[in-house]
Image (tube, rainbow, N blue to C red):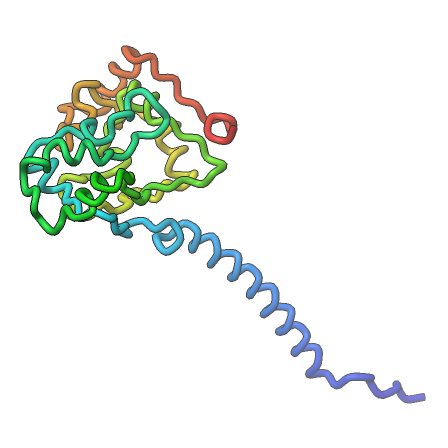
Length: 218
């Protein structure tokens, strides 16, 4: 007896293999694309500027006038958040300087109507992430390490990705970022030997790198 005719033609085997290959490859490619995307500036908003209610040029205030970061961000050494400048802080200077400038209309309105300025966050971490500015400053981590050269920014941008990997890389080896506490806000300070300086200051400041989940997720 002759063999019965196959139910499907032979070429269907090739089609089935190609279909499985495309589906499997497509799934792997999709996962890979998503992993790249969530680490890219498109997702993290790195390098994106945030428009503020008042046009504030950090180049002028920090670089030209030499105003210390802590004058506006007054709680950075004692609280989890660095704080935003109040209307009174702005008016303490601009009540006398450029007090009729159209750029300062929002400040004058804020004073007149007793309504606080609504500053917009540039580094807005997820609700499930705990970050404390005070402890980082106390351990010698300078503003520039996370915020970049704000003295060169006409409008503040998110200089670093602020991803979990980025944070962990620093927590595993923070010595290269540690500086003397009196140089915390300096945008230009450089150690002659960053590694050696960092190691010495880490001992002096009792720096104990933490990588446990509960450090940031509480």
